[in-house]
Amino acid sequence: MKMVNKYICVNNLILFSILLQTFANKLYKPAAFLMPIFVALSCAGGMNGNLLTTSRIFFVSAREGHLPHIMAGVSTQFLTPLPAVLIMVKSLKSALTIIFIKSLE
Image 1 (cartoon, rainbow, N blue to C red):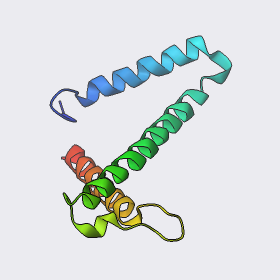
Image 2 (cartoon, rainbow, N blue to C red; image 1 turned 45 degrees about the vertical axis):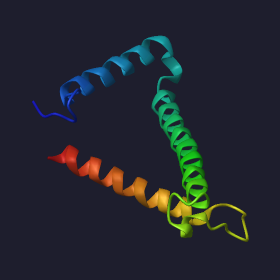
Image 3 (cartoon, helix red, strand yellow; image 1 turned 60 degrees about the vertical axis):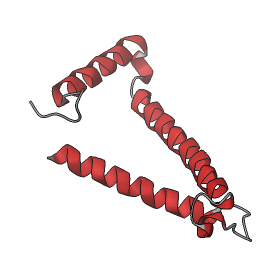
């Protein structure tokens, strides 16, 4: 049995997704195909909120001297903490890559 992480095995994930699809088919018969779309939009919204808050935390930490000063820079065009956002996106992409590679093993 292949493990995704310490607590959830792949077989349980497959059974859970089948259970959710069956629930959606019974409850929302004509619109059951919308359920995966809504889940994807929800995930995108969560990622957006995470990006906005975490990059601001990096920005303030750099401004207070806890992180390198380069992360306290602000874009003159958009007035956003662009270096902190770029570092956050890069670290998020790296983390997702590591998780994906680990799940393949």
